[in-house]
Every structure is written in C-alpha cells, then in structure tokens.
Length: 353
Image 1: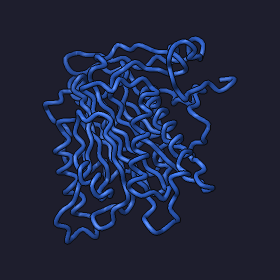
Image 2: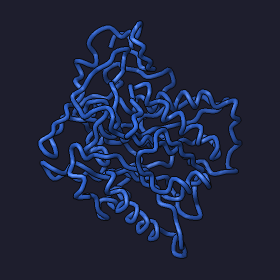
Image 3: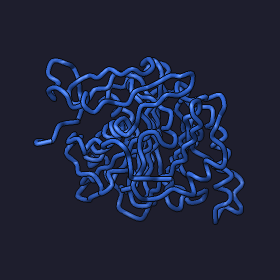
Image 4: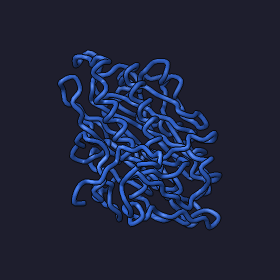
C-alpha cells in the first residue's frame, strides 16, 4: 500500500539539503536495487493508530540469506531475531516493523508467509526479524490491533516505487522529538573505492529529545523525552560482509544524535543493515574505503528522520491526546546558524530556497 502522495513537503522541497552526496532518483530505500517496501495502516478512530511496514529484499529466504549486521544503541525494546542476526550475520526473511505489543503476532505471521514461499517447502526453522516502537501514546496498544491479514497485505503489496511517509504503516501512531512523526526514508549514491553504490535508510521514528535542524532547537508538544524508540533499516548494494555491515548499522544509530535524539533510558534504538549483493558476486570493499559510505548513511538517516516529521500530520488519538505536526514555518524561520548553540547537523539551506 505505497503512495507517493503526501499532503506536506519533503525536506528537499523546502530547500533543506543534508550532506553533499547525491540521492537516488526516489530519495528512498527503494533506490537500492532489489529492495521493496510495503505498508498496512491500521486505524480505527479515535483509539487505534497503528500498522506494519515491510522491507523486502528480493529473493531472501532460508537458504538464500543476504549478509547483514545489527547495532543496538539503547536496548530498551524488542527486535525479534536479533541474536541470530548478530551471531550469523545473515538476514533470511524480510524485516518488519510494527507496534510493541503486536510484534509477536507480526513475527508469527511472517513465519507463516515465509514458509509458503517457493523454495521453502522443506524448511524446518527460520529466523524472522521484527522490530517495534511503542505507539501507545496515540493508539490503544493493549488491543494489539495488527493481525496476520495486515502483515500479509504489507508483504504482498511491497513495491520498488516511491515510499509513503509519515502517518502510515508502522509509523501511524509514532511520535518523535515532540512532534507527530512516523515513517521516513532517504538515499544516497556515494563513490566508494572508485565504484558508485546506493545506500538507503528507512526509519520508524518514535524517539525523545529536542529537534535540532538548521542550527536551531525546536520544542514540540509531544510526550516527554524520557520515552521513545527508533527502528532503522539500512540497505545497500555495496559488497559488504556482516562485520562491515555492523559498522554501517552503528553509524545509522549515531545519526539520530544529529536530529536531537535523547537516547534516554526508556528508548529502544536499533539499526539493521543488509546488502543485496551476494558474497562472491563482486569484489569486496576494503575498510579503508568505507568513509564515504559511512557519511552517506549518516546523511540519509538524518534526512529520513526529517522526512518522517514533515510528512506526518497532527493526530488526535487514544484518550483524546493530540500531537501536533511539525510546523513548516517554524522549521524555516530565523537564521540557519549553529554558532554558540552547541548544535550539530549536516542540514543546510540551498541558496535561493
């Protein structure tokens, strides 16, 4: 259930450019060849604002895994399948994102879907990877509204086109940095070791802190910064092994600091990184060549967070709580300088914007 249509501008529509590396044509995770994204939004007003988001690498299944890495910034959360992901450095299912208390139902539905795929007729064990954020501020989380039909719809509807952002899928009820947030995505095409690759990031933004962009701090009206989480999925076509992909995942979590993340006690900050290039099909990259890729990941994650905020709309949910959208006029008001403010961000304004 993807759609390119959003009621609000993306970061670059406002002339805000994060870093020097060019984006892919869609500026989305799906710029990485062989990666599809699908959403199912589950909303029953006023109390339920939830859903599921699927990141689907083409051909991934038990026996046909892709190299992957994982990094935990703060572990107050649930990432189903993380220990086997870290131990083996392989991803053998799509990566699904959802609400905290729905994570286990989603994992079970993912297992059922994978077992039905061609080539899995004799599979006796598999490792589903499912991440979550707590959307309980705006949604009746105890109702566990995400079911098997929603998971299958997200998986079967995943496409390699534009990715819907904001209040969709797993981001329907999430809040970040005091504003309504949700799903955000971005991509970069760095030159690494003399070769051009694509790296994309998708975030389920739900973390606390104070938004920092264009050298300013913007206070929102959402829940306290002591709560929240962020799930990040990074994909690339660069030929990397699990160790190097873990280094990539680490940079993805680091990037949240640029946007003002609090990394609080109650936050679950996780990144999963994978490559679509199978081992032995391309010359591997050396560690010494990875700096441009690391920078691209930092920039893509920062922009994905900003896109998640800009695409989201003001939402009134469970118990009558309301979280405002990020006001575009406040985002662009005032001088774009960080001098004396202790703020760090790769974002800048394009001249003439």
